[in-house]
Image 1: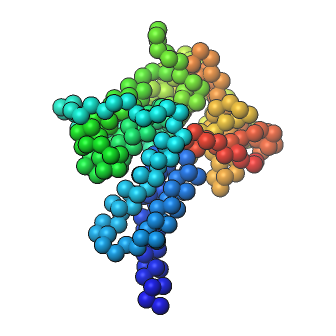
Image 2 (image 1 turned 180 degrees about the horizontal axis):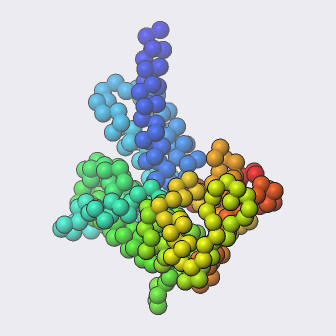
Length: 304
């Protein structure tokens, strides 16, 4: 009876940590499904080992989940070990500044999912754990098997890449890699949610148009707008419930309460600039579309 009682108590303590562990695993792996698997594996390890002698259960579980995720990232990575890691950190870059904190909001991390996939496994772990979850470098060093100084440098290097990507306008200049439609659409919704009007205008063609169907108007949604500023003002500070999605194979977004598509956002992009956005709420039209919500790099198909 005592063993059963201890097991139930251990399970209850684990459940209090599950939301945090799932958030960590989702950031590291970029997939909710894989994150759930990692969290479940952490529970199995805890259940086998027991929690006797564990003073900080949250910290212990975070370390376990992070190691599971690191192993998974290494397995699926197309390259071998990450590049050599300098042992000497750069002075003055031990932690993100206020601008970096703004960059790392929920919506912007979504917009940079493609970049995160490009980071090496230990670079990604160091960056996400420290800059997103404020895990001390000393603890991260034990997870990635590097010195604290090298771990700090890993996070610093990743932070510079994230900062550069987050502050680069959508239109690629000479010698700069083109931004794919997914990145443009994700950046648009990141800027919309954060109310960054100038960033929205940069992503839109000067004569961009927002078109809406009759069903959208009946729902009290946005009205037609023409010109980059007018369209940007329509979205600035809003679109919090919109989810990045593919619509008939093209990147856009969907508002889907209860996973039932109610409004579809279709984008027309030319030369890395958004020239038109169509809002569709007519259920008969939505029923003809193939819609898949994009979950940090993976698509989950929805049935209208």
